[in-house]
Image (cartoon, rainbow, N blue to C red; front, top):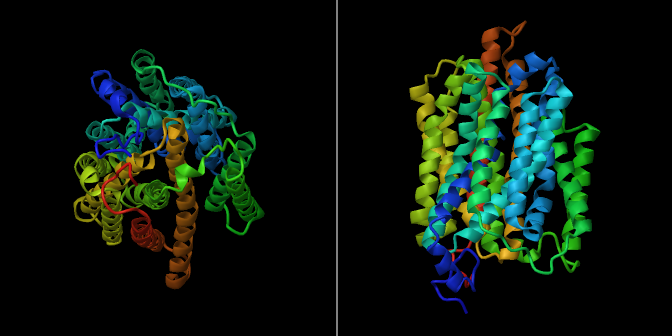
Length: 496
């Protein structure tokens, strides 16, 4: 039986290995390398959003095609996460980490040099493939590098800060690069992050052992990759078209069936892609569910708040990015403090409940916006509140979702966190876009007298944003109840 001093990073059996690694001064440099790689992946989820109009003008593709610049990345990234997470366990985390960095950098270079729409979309799809290889490798490296409980809390605090703040930083960086350089630099900037992380990874990351006797679950890979592809595509199609089209409900139904087949197969096969011991642990399952629900609601903050600032208030791309900076700072601070001070003392349950309820309160506060609101009176306070809530949630999820897993399962456990975030974002995109469109239509129909005026359309847009924020508040509140019920009381302990 493990004692209370056993490392929560790997559970029982870390003993002398943890003490030996605690004397290695390079572990903090390894953390910097992992943080740089993770920041690159997280930035790419939002950095292109502000560059899309400029890319569209430069390459001459239609507004209908524009969504594929985002969707191509989401499809490849979301479909391959579990496969790539398991591949990291089988091939070695350092190998997949370096391969992911090199491939992501090459795809970014091709995307930045794109001469047409097909070349840009192909580059974004390749970014998603290598991002799916890189993200779980980075998180599993973190989980296996830091075994001392106190050091692990600090390391995951930094990781949580990057995860929580990266989306907002992407908007800030995307706006600045697009305004002052070119939309192409939203792709080229990845080369800088990748170069730093690649050199650091080669020089600093030690040899990583492979899972002994493991074999790749090919039927499981096929089922879960196809299932995730169908779900992400179905939700993306619903966001841009309609829930009633066959390309939406047909793909969603197929995705559900394939994931059910995958779950049944995992219980039978001798070498499962996602061992049930990883997801049937209450705290880990609670962390994965938390990140999925938060991912769905967080989408409303980034997308619709940017719409409001740029379309209604007339902010530039750069000003919109800087307006998000207080949220970024608060989320980073909350993630660092939450993981180092709160998680070791209280455990994940109160952090999730508090973070979700704080987010819900921030979203309710945002519903007070109107056509003539000022930043200081209507946006600054809610952004800081939501940032703090996001920091508590994302910092906890990364640490808890990899807690107690055996080293041979670290990659697939890390991939499960990224999968939850990706799937949650896809669900949020589809659901909240549909809600916003319906709210706009209903408002115009209920207030129009003759031809809709520009003023009426502005009011309708603001009404759609506040409706979305109310829904996001409800999602966060429901998440506090559901995830808070699932998570265990007390600090994380190997005995759990």
